[in-house]
Length: 223
Image 1: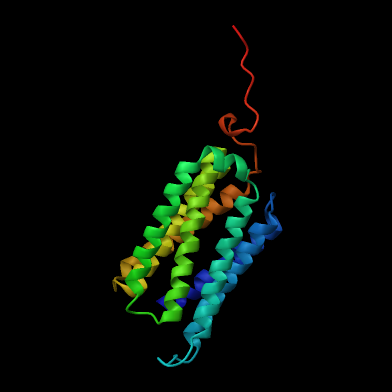
Image 2: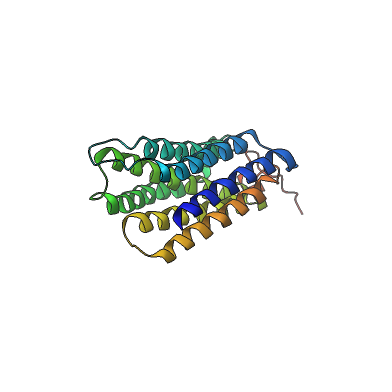
């Protein structure tokens, strides 16, 4: 029931976006824009089930537009997180972890994207590689944010991005590698959990990081 599932997802996200905008006590313009963009991508994905089948020599415009919207939505979350960080402090305190994350991201994105190399066209592969790169970048930024801030909001955001990443990886395997219906249930469930954590973290205000990462060191009284 993939068609029905696509419409249920689209409707649920529309209602969730309306609820967040109308009823949420703490609202963020970046998060609202993320929700609208992600929801629009889901709606286009549902509509694509009723469009004529695209031939091998034709361009699937809905595929490109919907995936670009997903990319934009994740970039908005990245920008929302980065603008709350003190980059100079982070690069000075977390230089080695950042370098390790960059190397791991490149390795993981290449490994994951190569599984679709024989299935997708060159333009689709480039889009898929970019998509996976943005998702891994979002996970890395969330991890850095948690290491920097170490509070409930950053922890919930990290959990949300972890479930988002696993949902995307399992969805990739479901579409291009394994024809197993159980994977469809798993990636959908992970996506729901991810949005639960995203909403939970959105209700916390941004606070200052732990003392270890504050620019000015704490004064220690002599005993």
